[in-house]
Length: 121
Image (cartoon, rainbow, N blue to C red; front, side, top):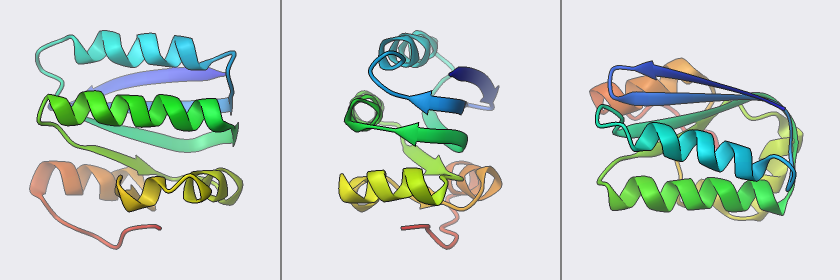
């Protein structure tokens, strides 16, 4: 799996490629938590466009980051999930608590300007 981290204003963009399973959740957790420790990071967007698979451990790491971000007063969003990955996340109930968007651009608009474009659920 590949993890790409980018900062756009106070928004951390986390772009994932490959398969997110129990072998990779620790590395993803460390990477995101390390960036959250930096002062300028306030919100996080997980771009799942390149993610081909996730299991319950992937769901767990997303929920854990959501809790940490909310404790800091920040927001989290998910975007560009494939149908297969989206189905797993829907079964786990994530779209009921985390906003899902079709694109990274829409998620950024939500974070930066408070816009609420059409949510992907």
